Length: 384
Image 1: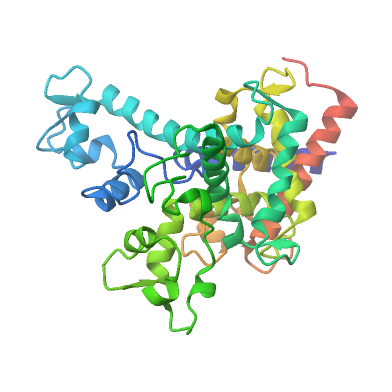
Image 2 (image 1 turned 90 degrees about the vertical axis):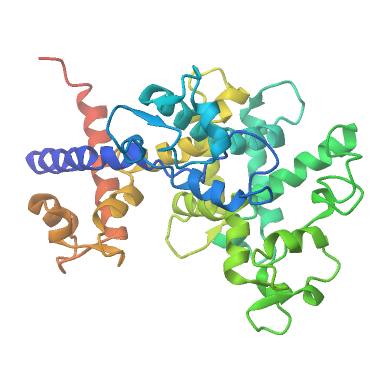
């Protein structure tokens, strides 16, 4: 019993050690900036704007003269956003205004994914998602499994955002709304837009395996997509350009988040059974225990994934732990990197001088299970 208590205390210490990293890096995808269609690299200066929003600087970094406010000359973001952030239009941005702006940006990214998932699942269009409707997420497995091998790779899971977009476009087309009889070449329009567009794998298009896609290899796919992805306009799409396109569509970082949650055996792919873990998110999202999810609740979908991961490991997110302490990014943590001898010895299960992800997860899950069992047998600890 004493050993269990001691290890539980160590696990609790890890929660405290990772709290700051959790707050700063909740594992969200690149936030969707406020505003509309120019985002994603299509508008003037789009790439620079996206870079700013992915790596938004701290208030202190822009406040060069440390007077507690950011002048127009100090502002390093897109010029047109200065007036939006400067809510009282006094010509400077104070810390409260900047904080509210950061919150709007972050909430916009979460809402974008959550809103699309809500629209996909609300099959009877009653403005709420039941537990039965929520299970409709599992139907996505076959859609995402492009090679029909019964497993999902990270690349295939990266197509989730596109599947949701296509579903919304089809629905809009059926109802005659935006994206239905749209402009030629636009989403859902008659020019072969998103409604009929199925994004293949890079390897499928690179017919001659030279590491780039030519316009000839692009074939009958919408030509306007080629020009958007070909950032340097050299007539080819290389892997880096293709990867950035997937990230802009939400594929890259969203896929990483889903993989770390769903790939329970860490074999680099997600089975149908592992994919069913998505249903564990319903009770986390259903904060008011009504048995239904509102659109607002669904905006917390990505946060719920992080919460589910942390619950399984006693409140410690293994990804956050490694991001903070794996200084050289070699996939393992040394005693020097962790800088806590007691916790290191407890987590280094095979005593080889390194903590791997598997060891960290195994240790934390064991402690979480032991704590839960103790709570069940003894009941809550009374307040002193």
